[in-house]
Length: 197
Image 1 (cartoon, rainbow, N blue to C red):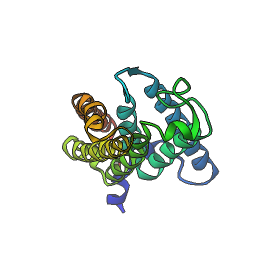
Image 2: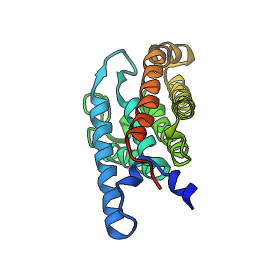
Image 3: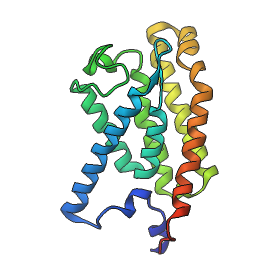
Image 4: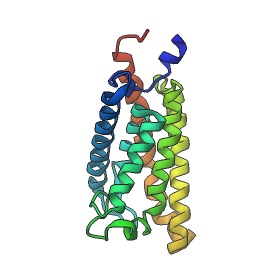
């Protein structure tokens, strides 16, 4: 039982044990997470078909802090907001809104964010978020899967060569830095907290 208590994501420290209060807190955190995702998406450097933003960093931090279930739920809520036409994505409203935007050049990356959140959240649920190397490895796997999904979708739209040139290469160094930063931050937060029983 003590082992199970130590294998919870950071957010579990702030959640009520059960009941309506727990559900309300989870909903509040998911909404705050979508706001963070929106802000991170709007912080961007324009490059072409796909721009650089802080969104990857936000997804990594949300997934590692929230764990698998709440992390994925937050990403799905964010996608639902975007599908309903709210201007939450990087290029909305200037490049379109809703499902039409989601099926555009960034569609594979958006879907990849959900998978990345699942991978990193799964790792956090198993206590990997306390160890920089373990969480870095999980985040790196999530990053590679997300980039592969983005590349594959973009390749269908503009071809594999341009997809690689504009949708992968410009992001490699920046995303590695974001993975390293997130992998350092989360265990650092755990180290500042009192040891859990």
